[in-house]
Length: 310
Image (tube, rainbow, N blue to C red; front, side, top):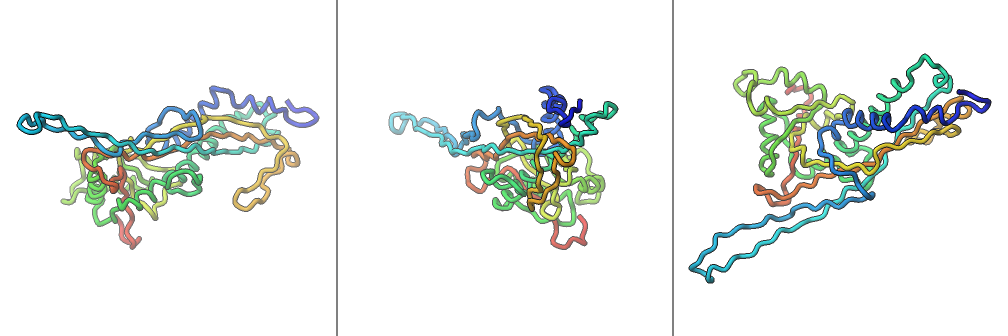
């Protein structure tokens, strides 16, 4: 209820309880293509978690009784360290006080999907494109693919292109578990034919899991689609969800510092929701490729001539 000083914090805090906070978190995972496709690790116990990554494989030997009295050879496995660094992501939702006082408005039904969407967009943009990523996060997935030299330029047949991209992943010793592209890729799949012009049906490519990013964070100037072993990309949560109610704050645009809202002056409150997470691509050695050139993802980059369709 309102009082002489405006809205009490408890009225806003009632919007987010433990169950509701979990709904935000689960909804964010569903909205974010990175979190929905990557493998989740146990929650982090500190802001930096070490991953033990296999860096060389053991070698087995046949024992030759005619040499060295059948002495057994020794072998070793080497381990390299990689780290998942937790970074905080926050969303602030300004709310008009009169909305809080309106019993006929299901305010949470309006706020929850916007929170989930905002978290998912920011996470996907940082993970896939590297845009606005925290300084201690690894490079984005597409920049990492470029660094690994695992790119194929689109040709005249999407079916053949996908095969070439998959081959890049397989040469690194990984099996492709799925394809990821922008929502505009759906139409290309509906019209996709094999090299003889026949619609694909029952092939390995036809059976692959396809995911389409529809939250506006897919950069089609850099990628038509990504193929890869998505089990090799992992993330971990340091803190699922926390929130704070702001009643007398000034909210600024982080890009230029301009004031967006003055809560006290505009009869508003704000809900600040935060989570902390990190991600990594362990990229361990495997039986097919022990070199540093291996990478579990490959990118189909668009043609330089945008007038030519796939």
